[in-house]
Amino acid sequence: MMNIPCRGTPMSYTVHTPTQLGHVLSGHRKTKKLTQREVAAQVGLLPKTISGLETAPERCNIRNLFKLLSALDLEIVLRPKDSVSGKNKAAEW
Image (cartoon, rainbow, N blue to C red; front, side):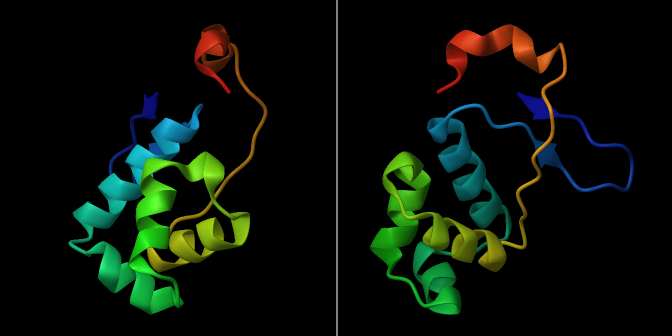
């Protein structure tokens, strides 16, 4: 599920599955016109680690996830579910 931003605010995404997380990471990297190799070099990871975070984030190290988030200028925000996002529990992991 994607949240629609207000005018002038950055795009935010609600992620419910590892697959969704991978798509958001990959999409954001591509929006910034960065290759996996460039992002990996910024944070001291291998390009295959970036690939793994984008294709199978559930198998990856949390420290590496935070390194990738840093390179992409992203952050994780935890908040209680609202009644709208709570409806799709079957899609959650």
